[in-house]
Image (tube, rainbow, N blue to C red; front, side):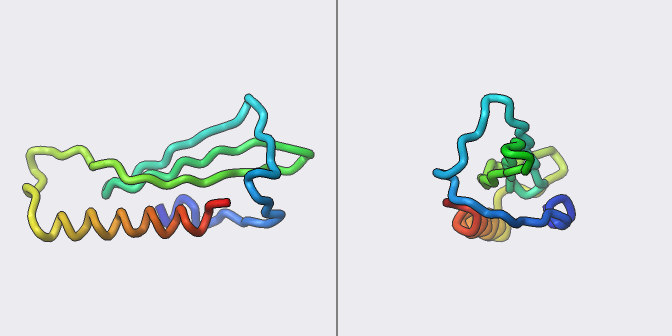
Length: 93
């Protein structure tokens, strides 16, 4: 996730209530191996590109080679869920 969103420059920030997104938006969902998903919705308004960011946790699909649920994997889930909450807090509003 870090590398994907690393080059994003954010300026001309407006509260979401001040932006009326049109019907023709572009939405991308970026899924990571640990269950973090970033949903980026973008549109061009007044010759400027605007985007919203929402983050969520989805249980990663498991394979036969992955270890079963352990205390370590439960801690990793909690860490990702905390990261989701932190990212949503930073990008809301």
